[in-house]
Length: 127
Image 1 (cartoon, rainbow, N blue to C red):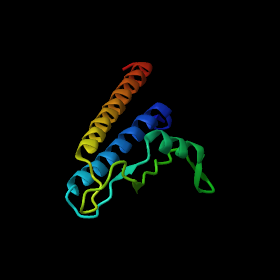
Image 2 (tube, rainbow, N blue to C red):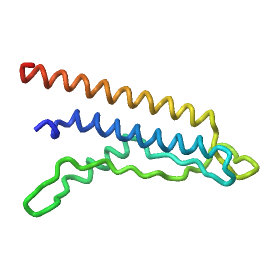
Image 3 (cartoon, one colour):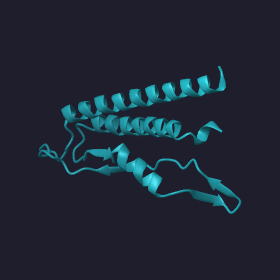
Image 4 (tube, helix red, strand yellow):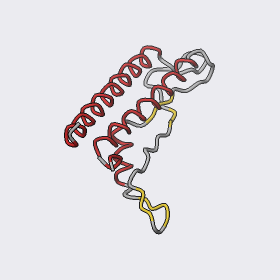
């Protein structure tokens, strides 16, 4: 019943996105000294969520309709804004730290939205 509330799906999607992006940022930082490593990132959450919403409802079987489609997140190699280091590595630790900070903010936002929505649901059922 509660898995079809859109605000909860949005909060869950943002939390999943934040976890996936934090993993990519951590991988970029871990490979900061790897020769030839190219920076990777995930498409912005808005694009991922809009693409998932535009896809519509997917059916799993003729008798079932799946309304809880998952967010599809894929990493892509980015074209570096600045020049690569002499060994071909394009990781900027400063840029990655900014991404990590943005990602933490998005995760905190997802938790706040989820908590608020959950409070509203509890109030509506009288608990």
